[in-house]
Length: 196
Figure 1 (cartoon, rainbow, N blue to C red):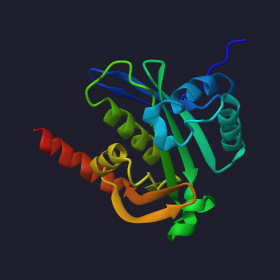
Figure 2 (spheres, one colour):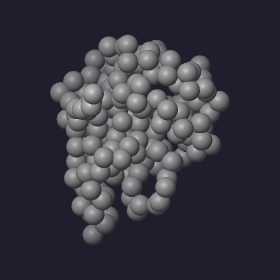
Figure 3 (cartoon, rainbow, N blue to C red):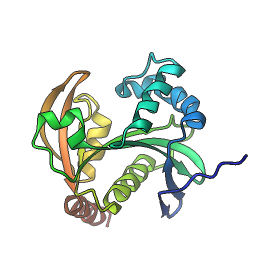
């Protein structure tokens, strides 16, 4: 039986192709995800030592949650990233600030690089943000990356995220940052002006 995956969002990027997003499929995607999260570049994902079964169990829990969802992103039908979307008011992070009803959290993990593509991570990141802001329930995106994860801080700031404070989560010291649609659109305008 051939399963078809419902794409929830797609975006055509000139010179690159189509980036599309579909729901995570536990049985099919877990082995691939395990091969990503156990590589040293993914250390901030916190699963370097996890077995295949442990990864499966963690993502089964996400699948079972009504407030947390995982997705696979594809470039021209090849899986290239994992994305998670969660309702912050139902998450541990809500204990660290005044969470709003339409705050949604985002986690992003790009697949190991096979060949370098200029601006690839930015194209992935901005496609994910475009998807978040296409959802009527999302007014603000909340991120809480590890304070030492410089690569993601650069991407967040490029997209218009404003850093508010550092918080001590049980598993990491995190930087709490926020972005509204207006902040993101302003950042895109600045990028266009900078590129001229």
